[in-house]
Image 1 (cartoon, rainbow, N blue to C red):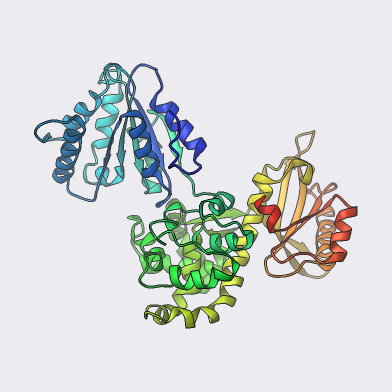
Image 2 (image 1 turned 90 degrees about the horizontal axis):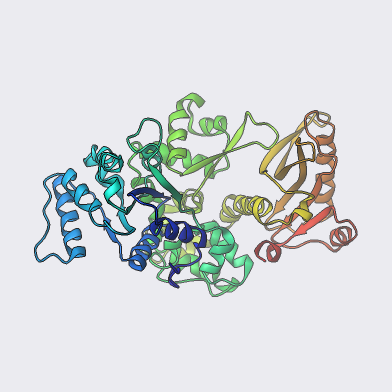
Length: 487
């Protein structure tokens, strides 16, 4: 099946879905599609069933009886039955659904599956029974796809002793668009403007159309005005979206605590102890909250590049970072219509330091991991992270924004490169000297093989002429600006 022109990017995801939906193998099969909200899963699956003539049902929050009625209505409409189909149980509904494709493969999508399974806990077991050899599997070529945004629930569908464990032939996660794809999606040719927008809305496709009404910054000179009219405008849905993201997660039963944890992280408290200190709690009190936030995909824990026992918690959704760092402290002013234009100028310094700076560092790590040519790094990186390096003589610590590790010919892990990222600062020779000093500290440490470690300097504001001259003559020093990040 050819991917429709209305589907942006998603080539790999479409190829997997198209292959699964049209697989000629005999018998019914099961696939699971998951991903964070607003990533276009429903749009992608709708395009698939339209292209293949399949059936799609999108569940809503309702009782079991109402869900069965809605499912019967949708199936009857698909089959063009003269009267609505009525099912008394999900056993009947699933049996009828598996009878849709006796002669050839047909995709059948149940979207928002967690809504159904929560009010009908036996539904996964009913589906499992149909997929068993004793069920309808041999007599059907239905390509069933269960889709949902509740990451913890969808992950549990196929894990442990769950009924559907071992039954799925496809387990597809639809990710957010990376920063490059997001820039193309928003149609922003200027890389500086593209990264500033990405620092607020990330790579969530829905924010481009539904949430901003196709309003995109016209260029660098229009960025501030765009923030005021599209993001900080209480009449636009993006204004309250960060709050709703938490409210939509059924596993987050104490919103105040989770908002407080996210606020602490957005303020730069990325270690467990620092978060606990910010909230006035013991670190052990936050174990459950941090684990749940990880399970629902709201935060990620990134191990320290040089100390695996420690790590930093980072918010996975840029809009949530922007809300907690910028909007939440000024919420009372921003809620009043027409105030955003006055408030935004005094929020810009916070935006640059607490939102754009950390986001730029994250983008630099993404570029190093997935986009940098191995010749630039002196090898292929299998791990890229930020880290902290102790300086015993100075009794201080140095933060390393980018550390890339690869494998040597003998299989041992080698430090390929370390890097520093500065968003709003012109990078010069002093920054290079700092990296050289850190490299010497790492070379002196046991267990770190940094003999061939290269140095990378990232900047959103450019480089000094003397540093540029050094990089021209020394290929082990790499300068990466915004144009290179986006090229």
